Length: 239
Image (cartoon, rainbow, N blue to C red; front, side):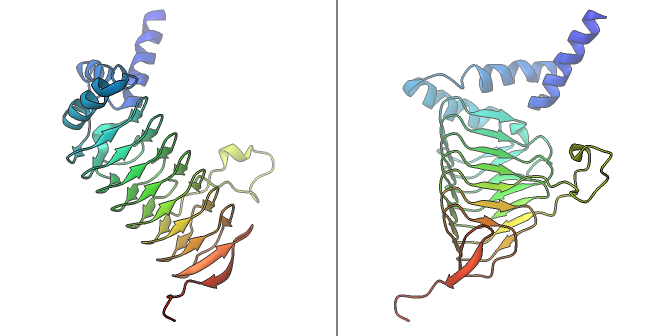
């Protein structure tokens, strides 16, 4: 019985990290685990070379991988050219299909951020910048357009529960289906912004620091507050 439990635990770990075979698990451990904390130029160069060629479904040229980056199911991830992932980040593609976790060209993921495709795809367009300690949880899909910037400590997505559901059952067992979250191109989210699942933010919008966005945002809006309300529109300097 103990042996069965051990095998079961090992198989669960293999499934969690995305290793298709036991040999694949050994390869994952060598590359993704043993190389992750390696410091200095040796760590930088080995991760660039071996991770790019040996872990991802697709990875463009000149990637940058910091120390202690955690990867779950990297074989489902597409990384574009010159993607940079800083120290202590976590990327998790367990619940999406191959190619549904996409970091396009010149995407930057800053230190300590977590990107999880827990119930849907996660796609970041070219030149998207994710600040320090941001959390992106895809409940029904997350799409972020080109050139959008997130400052530190932003929270996007997450699951929602049936607040008006059955009172004789824990809310944890009443998870509602995800609706998806879309942020258009050229948006700027200030520090500590929260955007809940189901929201669409139009192109060119600015969300002030600390705002909580619970409804759709028109293009080029300036939003602030809890919950976020429109306080103006962006305007050209020539207008």
